[in-house]
Length: 368
Image 1: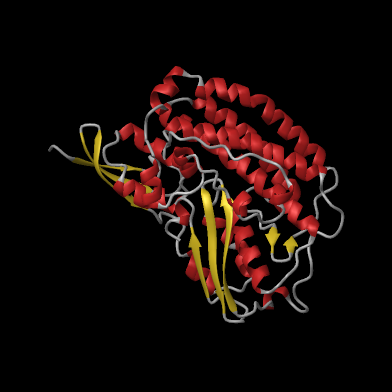
Image 2 (image 1 turned 90 degrees about the vertical axis):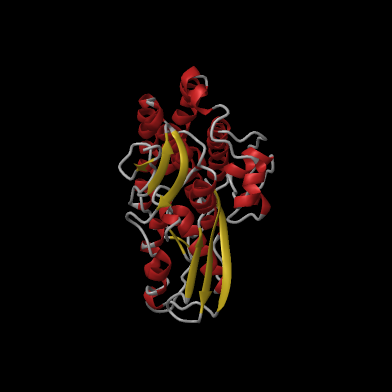
């Protein structure tokens, strides 16, 4: 037997999400690899067409469990454009707050997740503890820790609770003060450098071949393509932040950019809290039952910048109470499916989990 078949996931500590990679290996080199998604979540798009517009609010966060709010934003934003709904100014700012808290949360999960396949469990414990503090904030604002169902057509479900600003600032101050320790633990660690520097490359030609966006593209091409800058939504054109870029996309660089984005998200949130306008957090979108809310006939592509790149919903309405068609443009689809099958071969077995973590792959958005 020169070539054997091995399975990575879904139970492996290096696997991110409910998926599996079938690897055909010779020695410790992967000769062929195939992603098998759909181990838990699947069929979202067709399910959305069989639910009302408002009932979908409870379903769409599950398209990407660890970053559910981008789904809410895409869906709500698309429905609002089709129905010409004007969202209050305060809702725009609250949406930015939620989306940036979510960005920090998933980057911390990634920074900690690298500890599983490398044996650096301290990073995992630190990141999970800090992320749990952010989940406390989500629970205080939305009533939920994971699936928030907070960004809805017309704004957000309810106003921010009194005094939440102090909790947010205290939490962000604590996380920001610990980031230099993350830097020493992960990026200045000789063992981690040997595992990440020059490994799992994502050259610019591969980025264009696969259609990779987000950190994968920005780390390989130096292009500061970020929808928050290129096509601002919410009120991202009213806050200042930088888009970290690089021109050498190995595992180390991609993780470093995630760390830098945490700093920028904290910077955005501080501006949002300082500039939070007065007023209502939502507008009434239906005269009768919200479950019977209809959306005007038309089609729209609604996109936001997720932690993994451009995340979009293409939605078609026939004027009824349910979407006629919904198609999800998952940000990690190119590197999570096409990249694994085309470019993972040639890497070592022990680097396969690092592919998932540094590329930022969310398996439900692939088999959706």
